[in-house]
Length: 575
Image (cartoon, rainbow, N blue to C red):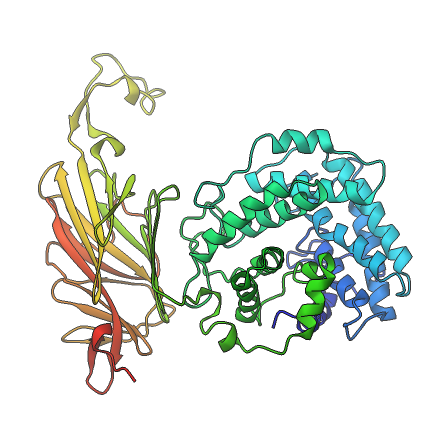
């Protein structure tokens, strides 16, 4: 449950585990990461300080005022201060040295602890801890000012860190630098998606930074971007509580992420706007990630709003089922949404979720109960350059039409002689000079529509030339079993497989959930197609040849062990 007591209990266990990363007897701190590096980043020493401080100060903590915990916090803070270089910056040792954005992440995380220490000044050594925090924030913020950034979200982390710092320490003024950054505008589209498209990681980072800036810079208009983003993310939760990440440009792309880092944001904005659905979503996010390492930001809403803290503490315990049977992805009614700016088409119906992606070779993400298809890829052997990444997406009756035109593919053909000597030094660089015999490229169109028992994917080609090998490939998490009319295969979860469906239908299953795929064709038996993105794991492919006019069915349903057959959703028993 997302309550102060439950969060502090999780923090205490996490802090106890983190203490294993400090050399015994070393009061100077020295948090050591799994890489064997003493690191002060927001995922290492600064994270420990934040979580330990909440346990030390909060009146509801079972270890409030612990002398052993106090010594560890002070040692870690002294270590953090010592890490600051003369520039005022710390390092992300794996890549970014003297890094303003990585320093900003730590300031953003540690600055609220100054308010925490002031709020609970009755705790032993509160003044000492507060002064160490202020010393670090002052040095680091001065280094961040004017130091630059890498990625779009870094801009808002930098601004929020500086805004918080100058609100704590009289005489600090970073308004010129933050003003120049904010003049660039917030990188969010009309659907509510940030430019990095990172629903699993950086959407939360940007939203939290905007909330801090809205408060510390007195810019409440920034919260409108947060509201738009939360509406967008709410449409992308999967039935199991994870979120669609297939379109991300960052490290969460394609990963199964339960975005606990959004919980404090949903709670803050839900309380601010009196949006009960957002508050429930915050609660279910925490419930769905009960065994995960807790986000150090989870207690932050209660520091901002004592009224919210009092209300949370007074609420009776709520079960995960009450909060949402399948976690934060729960939807009360079927929903079909076309998001034109982001190039996303979304179907959400109970335990079923389908996402179609523009400008992405993965094209599709499908969740059905415990089954997951994490990509549908379409490619051909045409010079290794026939790869379907939809450039257009438009609504049609019952679904969407995606397409890529011949002009969007790289040109293909054969080079002609230049009629002069070609040296060894220029042999690899002369292609631009050569004339070429060009060959026609293809136009490809894929219509995705929904019928009573499933989805239809109608692929058509035009142009190009006949006879080119093509395949539709479905990339799945390893299923429990693969059924055909003549065989049952039980895959090894550790093994890769390429199953070519040559006729009829196949069924993948996980528990009672099943997905029927087909029909197959006997056009060819190419298991690894040149031009396709290299795939690993478990794959089902449909072989085709141009010209293509083919309809693939993906039918979510159930498997009856009693009848040894696939059962469509429309035929499933009802109480």
